[in-house]
Length: 426
Image 1 (cartoon, rainbow, N blue to C red):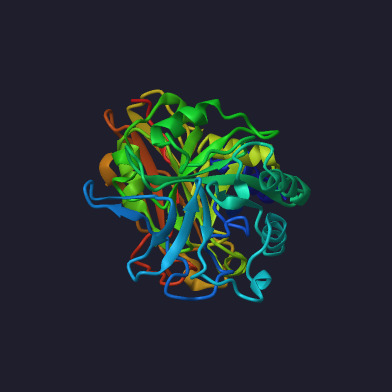
Image 2: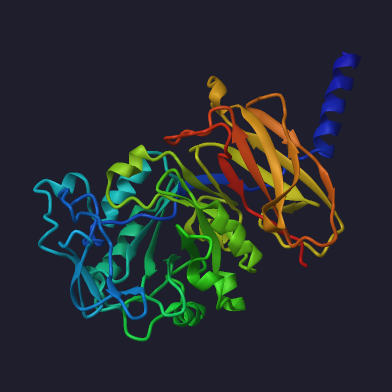
């Protein structure tokens, strides 16, 4: 009995010395990017044709850029792909609607219902704000009111529905790119006269929340030099655009853009936006955005996004968390010279050897690898390295598994998860 008591006391002491870096947070999985029937100009509801799903713009030969123009916008094969008039985007007659389209597309309520049934903890609808259904562009718009109300109605103790929109700047000037905005009262159309990225950044600073929780935003499917090569950053925009899609459409990786954004001073955390333009991707897609939140409520999920406690994974249940000097991932430190990491990675699918963790590394400024760890492959790995560094501005963690993730095309040679940075305060 004495021996048993000693072993119990030792176990308790070890646990006290090495607490789980989750630190009272819980991990929730969801999707930050989807399009409902309010995005009518393109998506699963349209029949396949030479034009279906094409988003193209009229070329200005003098400036050698693509710009939106009134009337039909011609694709390279000569058919009309998009009809844009008065800043509203609708499908052209060359893009017929499927007779049974309601099987593959529907209103926000249908998206939320299917996401809930498929085990998502949260799900955001983010229709393009230039769509015809969302005109006029103000809080009185019927579709915008319905989208927000359907999110309220779908939210319960087991699921959080988020209403947002996608700001889709495809003509500049001053840069182009798409950005999801969640939890605002109003919406902004990127195709409206005088609206560009700098205008959007100013607008974002004045946007009021739609009920509980903060306004948050994410850079969508970016290229390394997107958004005017990341120019125009303001403190206010930096405080609201706290995320970036490292994963888009289940398995398209935008890692170079993530590093580029960080190197240009944007404080963004990785997310996965499945960008499904219909219903079938809800069950089919396995990649997820994960958040570290105190509870499964709208306010707590948005707070996690606001404070950059997120990660993106090509796996729908990979559990990742870490601290640096006791501060949770997503934090900004006070210029430390020694950074003590405590990284814990787990996959609950212990019967599947492809889900074993095979490698973890720590990346710093410019995408340079600071340290890496190759453990004996296991479904649960803990790594506690220390790094001496007095100059780097950020660090983040990547994870590999034996099977390369659950999404199509998984490659064990590539990472399956990208975790929120920790900023040093420099």
